[in-house]
Length: 201
Ligand SMILES: C[S@@+](CC[C@H](N)C(=O)[O-])C[C@H]1O[C@@H](n2cnc3c(N)ncnc32)[C@H](O)[C@@H]1O
Image (cartoon, rainbow, N blue to C red; front, side, top):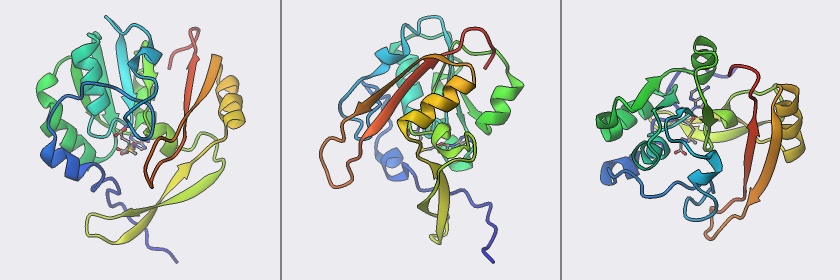
């Protein structure tokens, strides 16, 4: 029987970069490589909007939007204690416009129905939260002690995303495949946008 663990499997993610790079990023990229492809314009004009980043990690994307796109507020939500601590150390001073929230996104959104104008996720909670218990795949990870572990990740095909978003009442569903870029760890990414104006999120 497998060992049940509650270890923070995001303990190591972004840690090396967080030690040397404390800057607010100059750009926002949706692609896996983070060097090219579409940017924050995908989200529309954020001026005065209330925004949430679902699975924000160290909150680099949210910090960029806070500084360069003057939203009313961005809530950078993440369930990982390690990621929340990293985000706090890096971007805590951007409060109150940037609000770091240590919570599971499902619980957070249920607690704040209709609170947001714009929601986004960059390889974040949408990837790691069961949309309909479909297409599970395990991703290697490490506990803080260095032990091997796995994470469940839902890598949905375009038609499945379209179907589950449509069934959840979203309209204007657009899917764009972003090229992989260079490098041995390059991967293509799906950029998915949709709107739901008649129901709270
Ligand atoms: C691959 S990281 C991406 C982080 C960040 N968006 C980035 O691009 O650097 C995935 C993040 O999603 C967070 N996450 C996954 N499922 C979550 C959930 N249900 N609620 C809140 N955060 C979640 C993890 O804690 C982790 O920080």
